[in-house]
Amino acid sequence: MDEKIAVAIDGPAAAGKSSIAKALAEKFGYIYVDTGALYRAVAFFASESGIDTQDEKKVAECLKGLKISLEYKNGNQRVIVNGKDVSEIIRLPKMSMAASDVSKIKEVRAFLLDLQRDLAKNNNVIMDGRDIATVILPDAKYKFFLTASPEIRAKRRFLEFKEKGIEKDYDSLLKETKKRDYNDSNREIAPLKPHKDAIIVDSSDMTFDEVVRYMARRMEDQ
Ligand code: DC
Image (cartoon, rainbow, N blue to C red; front, side, top):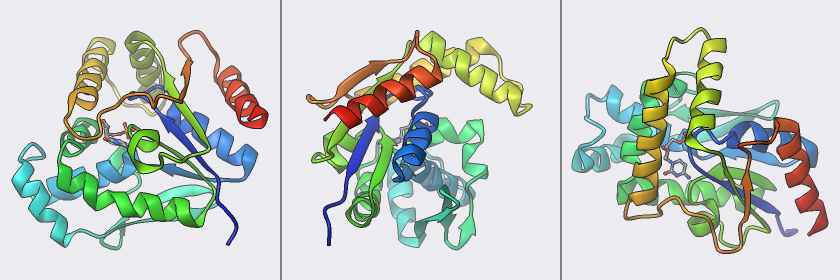
């Protein structure tokens, strides 16, 4: 089998990873894998089962009854939990912090590891997350760390929600963004941090197209 190409895009919440990764995946004809959706799926399943997502022991135990798979329809990732498509419900704002909670748990990270690696074994992938270059795919050919200031990220999220008709005030989004940064960067296992060889892209003062063009160029150059 020919060698597959992997592109890792790590970075904090709301840095624009998913839309940038989708655009690059389309340009290069790779599969886009949103790994945050996997942690959201675990959070959703635990919540549905009546489990507090901060209860590490109970969350770890519930994994026995959980089967997650990813399917691709017209290039769009669908997340399937025990046969049910949960792709929309896991995007609800309350699932963001719950996903951050469960992502601290070592059993959860171990549970999701093979699923992510298998996808990269069988496909050319652009995978976004927090630990893709540092843990999941350390041999990824291209490693990016995409970031922006917390204020810019909260503002982008505010506009995104507004467009979807979801009312969220800017100050609480900023607070949540900072809290998630803290959680994701300070946990013991696989904390959010740039790989030593990652290309750091700070998109605070860049447009969407500029970021896509810059990253595509870096991939073509290497
Ligand atoms: O990218 P996102 O906002 O959908 O991710 C939700 C949470 O999942 C995030 O706060 C931390 C966790 N996560 C992680 O720990 N590792 C990843 N590779 C992706 C997400």
